[in-house]
Picture 1 (cartoon, one colour):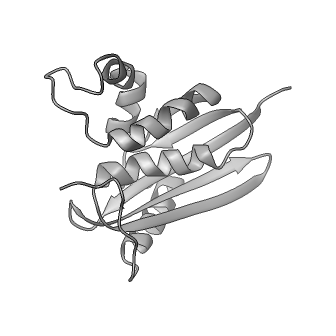
Picture 2 (cartoon, rainbow, N blue to C red; picture 1 turned 180 degrees about the vertical axis):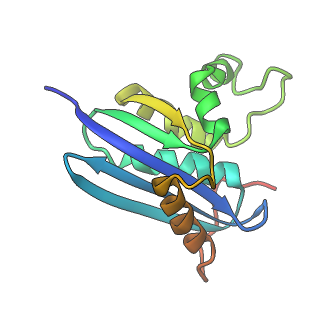
Length: 156
C-alpha cells in the first residue's frame, strides 16, 4: 500500500508566556485542504507548537509521507537533532539531568513519528509565508477565545 503525500503547516501562539494559547495546522493532500485549530486557557508557546504538530499527525488515519513546515526550532530540533531520542534514552531527562519539559506531549509524538515518515522544514515566523501567517491567525484567534479549557499537561 502506498503512502499518501501530505503537506502540513503548523503554528502555536501564546498571549503571554504562559498565558492563553492556541495552535493551528493546515493539511493538504491530493488537492484537498483542511484547517485544524484549538486552544487552552493557560499554557506556553512551546506546548502550542508541539500540539499543532501532534494534532495534525493524529488526524492522519493511515501512515503518510508528511512534509511538515514549522517556525518552531524547538520542535524541529527535538526531532532532527535527536534530542527526543536522547531524552527517552536518559529516562526523560535533559543532558543536564533536569526533567524534560512538555514530556506528556513528546510521549504522544513518539509513536506518530514512527507511524508516519515526517520531514521537517523550518520557515521563519512572521516573514510573509502565506500558510504560516494563516496558521498564526488561526492560533491567535483560538488563544483569544473565551471559555478555553485548561491544558491538562501544563505546570507552572
